[in-house]
Length: 421
Ligand code: PHB
Image (cartoon, rainbow, N blue to C red):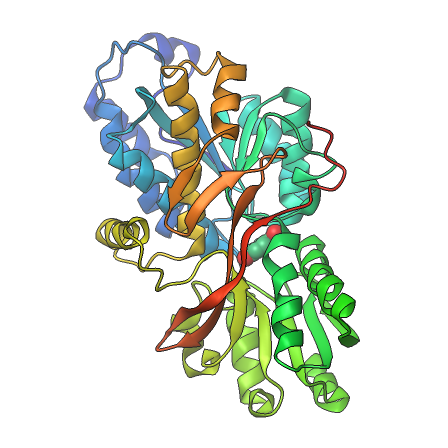
C-alpha cells in the first residue's frame, strides 16, 4: 500500500497540469485513505510542506519510505519514520537546499511482497531515494531492486550481512548495523563474565540466524560452549515450549534476539517462568530497545550489546532526545536515531552537490566519506557503506538501557564478499 504526500501523487495527467490550491491539497489528503494511527499522523504532520512556493528552483526530491507500519515491527518503523522526518524538519524541509517530499509504503515485514513494493516505489512512484527497511528479508529483496535500477537506497535498520557484503553497491548505504556487528562483541562479554554454557533462542530468519552466529563465532573461539540453538518461525510468539526446554538444558545463560512486539512478549514470558532468577538473559540490544515501557520490571537486569544506550550524555544525544520528545511526545530509541542519521547522511550527499542528485558520483563519494556526530557517538562508513561505530554493553536499570562500558570500540563489519575497493 503506497501513500504519498507529494503534490502529483494520485492525480491524473489533466489534474497534474492544473495547479492545486492549498485547499485542494488538503482536501486531496483527507479524501485519500491515509494510513491510520501513527503513520497517518506522520503523513499529516508534514502537510505544511505542501504550501511551498509553486515555482521552485528544482523539483522536490522524492524520498520513498518503505517501512513496517503494521505488525510486530510497527513501532520500529514509526520511530525510524519520525526520526527521518525530524531531521528534515530541523533543516526547514530541505536537504542540501532541495525540498523533500515523501511517499510511504507499509512493507508489513513481508519478504514475499517486498520486490513488488520496491518496484512500485522506484517505478510508478519514481522515488529518487528509498529509505528502508527494518526486516532483513525484506531489505534483501529491496537491495536487489536497488542494484538493478541503481536507485539510491539507505537502510535505516535491517542488518542482513549480505547487503553490505556480497551485494554491496555504490548506491546502497546503511545507517544502522550489520547483524554480525551488534552481537559479535557479546561473545567476549559473556565469556569474560565466566559463562561457560549458553543456549540461544531467536526467530528463524536472516537476522536471528546471523546475530546468533556472530555471537557464537566469538564466544566459541574463546572457548565457550553453545549447548543448543532454539528457534521459532518469525513472527510467532508461542515461546512456552522453548522456555521449558531451556529449563531442562540448564545453561549458565541465554543469548537471544527478538525485537518489537515479539521482544516484549518474550521478556515477559521468560520472567513469568521465573528462569530469569537462575539463568540470566542476554541478547542483542533490540531485545530491550524501545520495549522497556511495555516489558516493565520483567526487563530489569537484562544485559545487551548495541550501538546505542539511553544515557549517552554527549551533546548530540541530549539534543536529539529533547527534539524527538518535543516533536513526538515519545522517548527516542535506536530506531529513531537510525532514521535521524539516514536524514543526516542524505543531507551530506545533497549538500555536496548543491541539491543536484543527478551528480551521483560526487554525491555518493561525499556520503561514503561522511563523519557524523550521531546521537550514538561517532559514525563513519566502511568501503561497503556499513557504519563503523562503538558497540556498547548496556544493562536495564531504572527503566532504561544504561551503558556499562564500550564492549568494543569502532567496530567495523568485515564486509565479507564485498567487491567495492
Ligand atoms: C532485521 O530483520 O534485520 C532486524 C529487525 C529488527 C531489529 C533488528 C534487526 O530490531
